[in-house]
Length: 409
Length: 105
Image (cartoon, rainbow over all chains, first blue to last red; front, side, top):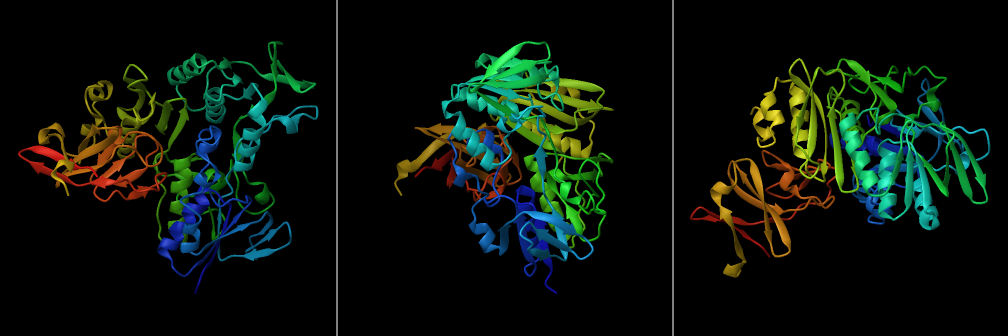
């Protein structure tokens, strides 16, 4: 019997799941229901090469739209507003019904928004999708005093791009370091130095108390009662899983959709993948939720395999990157609960990496360097973390020795 | 093809097994690899973004870009893993008297 598979959400996880299902099942009908007009596209360039005019809209679409036609994967641009898991039906806002045998939920995540007690909330910009990036790109053309709220990856990447467009940029972060949720402080400090050297102003340890407007400009009141002026405001203050559709259903939620190691949810024939899923990771023996390019892709592929009837555990080691100015920052594994840190390298020209060890085995690493300089060693770290091997610390800390030799054949 | 298209890269012992070196010629840049069964050459820059593959990781017959982990088959140039989707150009390689040569078109 030809299976009817619906994928709710039109991002990277959805696309990779669809392709993987087709790889294993030539017969199944596969339909992606996406909220965006565009076919699935790459989000990382939105804050970088797209803003910098190095890539245009067409460059962002995954491979090209032909891949969907070739593989008979249908993409429908629609807004689903009701899910009935009993009758296995989704209903769109124009009352169209879509039924499924198997459903994959890949709705991703959505931006946390700044709450203000006036009517300026809609004037604060966020960058998650192409439409938002388009608006920002257009509107900043004649702006030159831009405030960015939030010192995470997205805020810093936008700050880097705007600086390269010769804009005056001030970034405000509530914490005592940049990227504080996951990046070690020494690396965060090097990133801060790079931004400041390029002319960006970084303000730490300050909260936004109020935003007001006079003429066409904004006044931003900070927690120490100082004031900033801006002609444009962008915020990147984290995100939350997109689960509002499921809040009054039987689907088990807890910081996203609870999913086992096979991408299965609490409801039979319903799977979840990507940012929206809080999944059980067998290597870490805990639930984790990740928001990254690599995870969206690999988790989608894993869901696709399991939907196709292959029983495959998701054991991928987390990996993520951020590109700012000419630097490439990479993080692999889990950089917490460590009992030892080893430093490799001295300068960002050749790359600096911090390795995090627990009980002598390597758990994760974070590196920063001029584009391309830390990737190989971070990749090797991922392989070492997968195998949980005890490593020779002298080799880790000695730049003159290649890490390849730590990977046993 | 004209004999002069074969360009000397260096001696065979300049590359460790399962490793690569960067080779620049004119305004072009290449990667020359030593795999278990011989020498191979590709363009130097990743097809995804302009970053040199010389800092990438060679695993079996594959080169992985150090920036975003796009993966290519070294022998065919095929893009195997996203974000890379455009194939990498490959070049013929020969070894003569312990010297490596690549043919650049």
